[in-house]
Image (tube, rainbow, N blue to C red):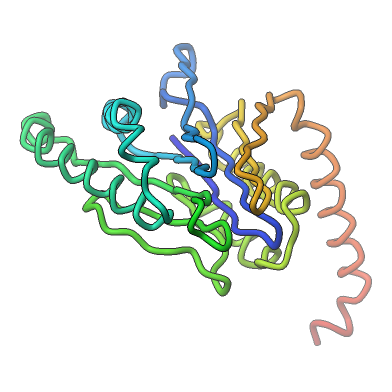
Length: 238
């Protein structure tokens, strides 16, 4: 299982991805990267993916091999077109073989960053067909993977005027709600943050022990809210 969050913030971007690559078999767990960085001078871009690991690995390998051409674009939407072209080439090459094994061409991406011709950082979603959408101010986040548990919290708490630092906190709580409901989405978590016009990324990895204080505090706070609402119950529910 996978859970990846891309967040467009007032002062930059946040990307959060779990690292679990296996599912179902609790005594055989493999972890690995789902966030990849491409950077050169005034070109900074990250990619997160969900779906078949083999397809993600192939796409990243191709982009690395063609990095000079990829990062020679002036604006990030041109970089998106380049990634979409690679995805379509990959689909044309692999889909017939996947169908023989009753597997879909399953590769979804969240891409964020800024190129030298862009006035601000931007965030995108790329679909398996190679089409893409821009994450805009009215819907300032994108999710791929196991999305149904973590989205409601983001809908209620996140907007594009929130800072990168606060967005990270909201994103981690969103991940915790997914982790609580589906333990196959599990730490470690990889995090990448980007501040506007910096053309630099900050990366970190959080393990289960790093997230437990936040989980305990979050659950305590929820319990307190329920108790407070219960005191107001006669006024709220007649």
